[in-house]
Amino acid sequence: MDPNITYTYFKQRKDFGRQVMFCEVAPQMLDSINPDKSEQNKYCLRNPVHREVQTCVRTSENNINTKVTKIKTTGINHSEGGWPKDIFCTDEEATARYRRRFERDDGYVDAVKTLNPEFEHYIQQNNAIEMYNIYFKEIASEKPVEKFLIKVNTSYKDVGTRPVSDICWTHEDQSKLAVSYCNKSFPEGVSLNNDFVCHLWDIENLGEPCSIFCPPSACWQLVTSPASSSMFFAGLENGKVCIFDIRSQIEPIAMSPDHLAHRDPVSALLFIPSRLNTDFFSGSTDGLCMWWDVRNISKPIDSLLMAIRIPQGEVSTYTNTEPVSALQYDRAFSTKFLCGTDTGFVISVNRKGKSHQEVMSAVFNAHDGPVKSVHRSPCTSKVFITCGGWKVNIWSEDIHSSPIISGSAHDHYINDVIWAPKRYSAYMTVSADGKFRYWDLLRKYREPMASVPVSQDRLLKLTSNEDGQYIATGDSKGTLYLLSLSDVLVNSDDNDKQLMIQTLDRETHREHILETRVKEIKLKLKAGEDKKECLEMEVENEEDKEDTEFMTLEDEYRAIVSAELRNMEGRPTYIGGDPMRRR
Image 1 (tube, rainbow, N blue to C red):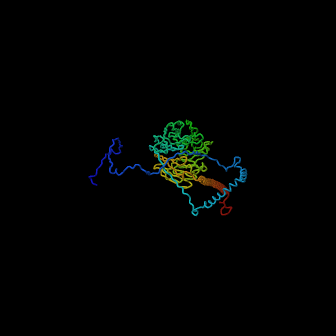
Image 2: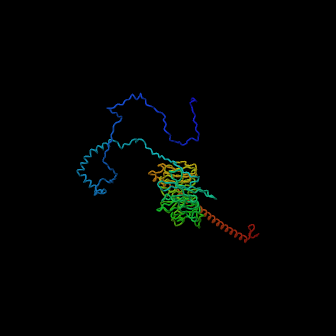
Image 3: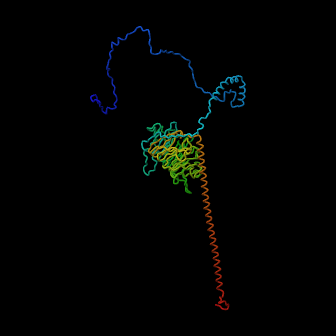
């Protein structure tokens, strides 16, 4: 390019992106083209003109009023033909009699004769088309492939890095997620929790929580009321329980007193479904369970110490209780619930028991470490699932010695487990490696159907909404993740419930046979030990008898010898056989 015809434009950086300023200016003529007189003389005006020219078709517009037709939607109830009012369609004799009388009518016969040719035409058309032909019948049919999908939809982050302590869904059409954050630890000095704010998240709004509420202490457990989606119940680190109503204020509207609260943090909190929805109960690591009424939490309704190892002659006290870590309420029996402990036991409790053995009706040695979660199966109330340590076990209330389905050991610590709400054979787990696992006992028995990496940190809590479509899980850095499941993983097949019941019954029966066999072996071993002791006692008795007889014979022998010696001393002794010659 010729440098003589180039021009460089310069503009400072501060002028970039400035607002365009418009202003009004006077009109300015840029160019004007005058008419050419020579060209104008070539055209002339013809007047008059006898021919018209038009480039488009002529149209006309007419207005007319038409008759208005009113349309309305109506329904009709048609049941068992058009029977008259005096004929009951459920009376077979009356309908048969009316049908015979109607068929003898001349109008009916003429109508049948008139419609017969038309019906024959349609029948012949139907016969001409092979409607029931089965195509590709020689090809073997294949089972349909179940395509499932687990997707991490969104994440809701806390401002800080507080671990998620509990998650619950609100009971409303557009469900929200209530989340509490705290570090569940028992420091010797000052508590590690300084920020106590809990969040209420709208799943459609990722930026910030739609509401907050502030407990006076760190919140370990959180549940929502089935009657009102704006009321929440919290179990605190100082052992108290409190009630929030976020419609009025962010502070608690009611709180249990200090002298009636738990001595340790509230480690389990559960709402009891009832007619009035006013009851809930709490458990703590001090080994005490308390029942509360929403209308008045100044004093608990009832309390129970979780003591199963009481020395003989003593009563249950705080010194021999088991620290509570999880609770599960039985909807079928309002007085029964399951209690998981930090010592690895699951206790089946009946509140209406008369004696201590009837109250603590069954004890399951579930895990070596703390029981993190206990949930009853939606398929049958006798079966429940537990997680603790590195294993997940499925138990039946009929078998106390061992689980009916023992899970394989994982490489990472399992922190929570839940059943799928509407899929009877499935359950879900989260572990310390940050993965969400979906298990189905009817599809894959020893390995998960899907394993999804959700977070790089430890996943601590897991909960599902009522439909089972969305799963919420939280990690140790304060991030809440929302997962969505495909319809295959949400809903059960038609035969899944029956197959699952058969599977659980089979495993229960197998464990019952093994338990009976173990008892028989123990009885035989005990009987063998008793028989061995009896034989040893008989041998000892025979040896004692032989010793006594031997001593008796020895005494007799000594007596005979002594008598002979005395006789020999009293007789004369002869030398050389001559009686006259004495020594």
